[in-house]
Amino acid sequence: MSSNTDFILAIEDLTVSFDGFKAVDGLTLYINKGELRVIIGPNGAGKTTVLDLISGKTRATEGSIRFNNIELTKMKEHQIVRAGIGRKFQTPSIYGNLTVFENLELSYPYDRNVFGSLRFKRSQAVVEKIFEVAEEIFLEELLEKQAEFLSHGQKQWLEIGMLLVQDPELIMLDEPVAGMTAKERDATALLLKKIAKRRSVVIIEHDMGFVGKIADKVTVLHLGKIIKEGTMEAVQNDPTVKKVYLGH
Ligand code: ADP
Ligand code: MG
Picture 1 (tube, protein in one colour):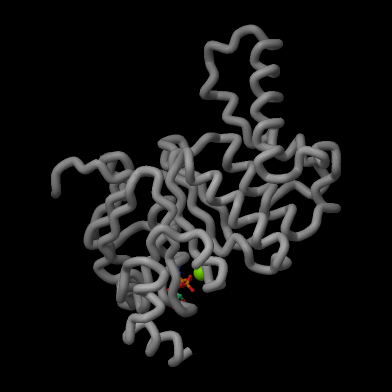
Picture 2 (picture 1 turned 30 degrees about the horizontal axis):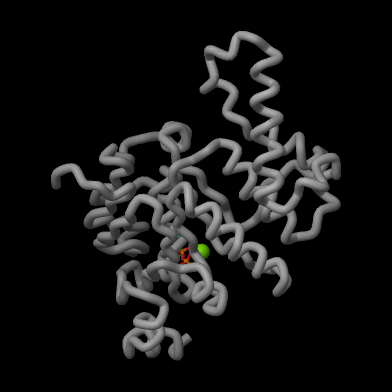
């Protein structure tokens, strides 16, 4: 067991084995506070499984995941959310029959504000938070719109907003721009950069053009292992990475 670190996330020797198949195989990965990290890699590389392991959806076979030096591998999913990790899945899970405002309100972590005994004060804080987030996710004019009538991209933003309302220290997003228009992708790049100013972000992404726009550092995963880590430029020029991508 290694000593405390300044990393927000320290993953060491992480392995998960499904019936003998190692989807993640001895992974060691460190994320700095305030960093925006992108994980790329061909289909089946183990990217989503890494997020499943961090969020407690899947149990590790071996290894350690520490968030602010707290070991996560024995914690339950809801405890990990409470510790400050928010995760967005590939498909949006919003409530179509509710408005944008109501979707955001539902995500507000009421139970953390136990001393808000004055009802009015409490709801005031909630409304302020919802307005602030709605503006960040480009939906401030659409708060009363029923969520099912939003565009695909707007639905993805709403789901990001539902995470932001909870103020997580670390946000993890699985292919956030899949299915978006070029314009929506550009807006999302801005949004993610803005989000990363106040917290750490881990993004899984396929779209290389998009990755180039946002990433501080890129980690390339292949068959559950890291084959390269560095700037987008370094990654793109790496012979092993080129081979893996050409092979697919
Ligand atoms: P990626 O997101 O990089 O495309 P995944 O993490 O979804 O890849 O999957 C990596 C590999 O692990 C795949 O071969 C997948 O079939 C396998 N896998 C993922 N989750 C499970 C599971 N719960 N049980 C068995 N195999 C799984
Ligand atoms: Mg995946």
